[in-house]
Length: 129
Image 1: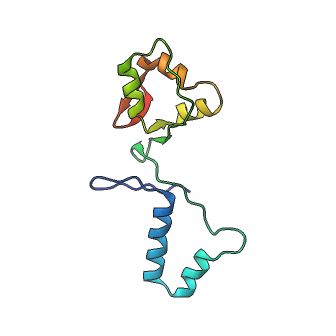
Image 2: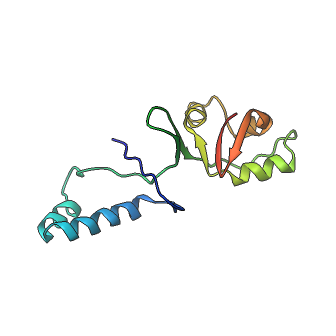
Image 3: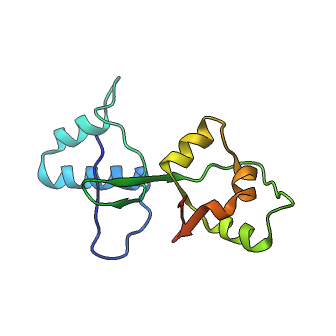
């Protein structure tokens, strides 16, 4: 299940441990200590799995998800200028389709830098134009 958060103001990065801490805090406020212990002292199968919060754009009908930029050995192809390298360094998250292509081995950092004009960078988010 995916839960979408739409903040009304600036939104910090939310890591999984921060989200889990907030859930535990809410459970301790709403329920007794036994419920909280049940949540955090599971023996075998966890009651749920969390990830960090990742950005998305769009509305209820169509959402574009972003995932953390993979980390590779730094490579600087000859065709990438300093302005491209600077823009690429500012990227924190990449669009889901690009992420899946990267994961499948169809693209990598060197190929992206070589074809950088096919992509857009806005607010640390990297996507197809």
